[in-house]
Image 1 (cartoon, rainbow, N blue to C red):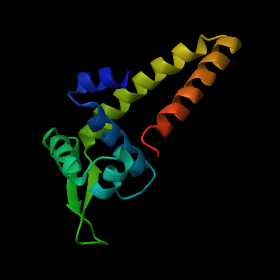
Image 2 (cartoon, helix red, strand yellow):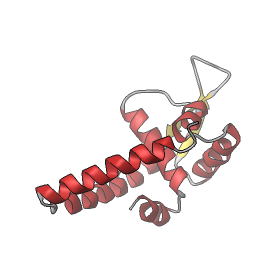
Image 3 (cartoon, one colour):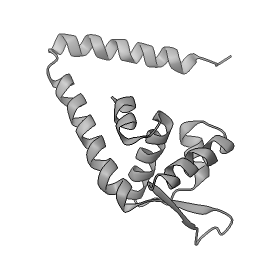
Image 4 (tube, rainbow, N blue to C red):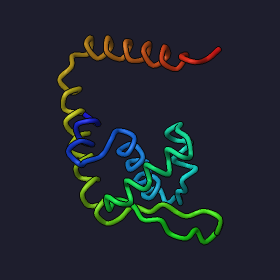
Length: 128
C-alpha cells in the first residue's frame, strides 16, 4: 500500500517514509534535521542528502536555518506536503484498517503470530 501511495505521489518508498516521519515530527512539535532522517531510515548521510533534494525539488519540504544550531538546517514540510500528503496517507491507512477489520478473531491471531515471528526473524538479519 505504501509503495502504491508513493507511486501515486511520485515518491519512492524511502521518500514517503521520510516525508511521513517529517510530518509526524512536525505534528509532535519536534524540529527535524537531516541527521534525524538518516537515523530513522538507517541510510547514509549522502543518501539522505539526495533524498532531501528530491523532496525539496518536489515541493514537499523546505530547509530553513536552524535557530538553535546554525551548523545545520531544519527540515520543514511545505503546505503542499501537509495538504496533499496527509489526506492521501490517511486514505491508505483507512483502507488498511478496513481490511484488517474483516478478519475473524482466529484469523487476526494467526496473522499477528506470523507478523511477530517475521519481524523477529528480520530483526536478526545481520546480527552476529
